[in-house]
Image (cartoon, rainbow, N blue to C red; front, side):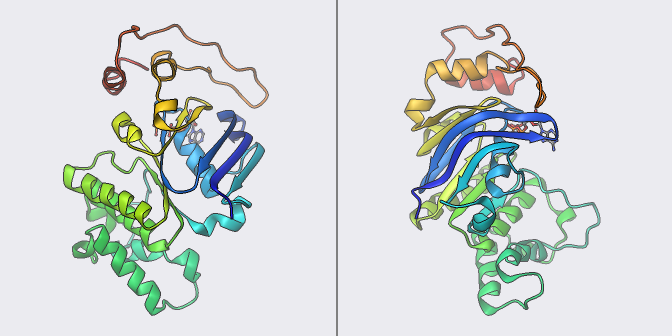
Length: 275
Ligand SMILES: Nc1ncnc2c1ncn2[C@@H]1O[C@H](COP(=O)(O)OP(=O)(O)OP(=O)(O)O)[C@@H](O)[C@H]1O
């Protein structure tokens, strides 16, 4: 039994020849909430995809829950940032949540009572039972997000990974998801989420700071130092575009004044003042 969700040594993540995450070595402890932070395009979703087994590292060693990604992927529920179903896909909310059970049930085995109970419980937890018969393309963005989280919950897991679960949600939906995150950890599960909300990250147990590579990993107060946040949110890209066979790009000039607080940095990033 490993004490870590993830142990990564020198992993490089790439889409074809385009590197999204340069060589990174880090660990994510089991238990509690881990927040993955970093600017747009810094590699947060890519990192989650590798842990979920959707994207294989181009190089390096990645261990998940003490073993290979493949043998442990069923122990992890992964809720993607945006799941795109083609418009007109005849899938109801219930169908989508039921899909969460397929990794456990298999596509061909009939649903058991336990499967049905897990689906119902997940829909109740995410407050989407009233929408059960509605088609996905009849829902608002926030309602859809709740349905995807319900799908993740229905799966049954030890680790719940959520890619920007709060983005675009109204306060009630955000609170529902926040409650779920805390309930998960009290039930002994681990949660790994990506976020742009630095306050949410400060409240986490562990933080991974990403900027084209994993820049820092540790407790929030160790990682979210002024120097680290300025380097990542204030310097633009640490790496220009590179290819697997290319050299890292050059650093760009400092854009942030030294007295800028983390909150100001975040506001400036969201308003587009910081690239
Ligand atoms: N399917 C893909 N094919 C090619 N490049 C991709 C693909 N997905 C992401 N990338 C690139 O990989 C890099 C990291 O993207 P990623 O989605 O991991 O960033 P992120 O930190 O999650 O961003 P955001 O905060 O905007 O969601 C970016 O340069 C992005 O353009």
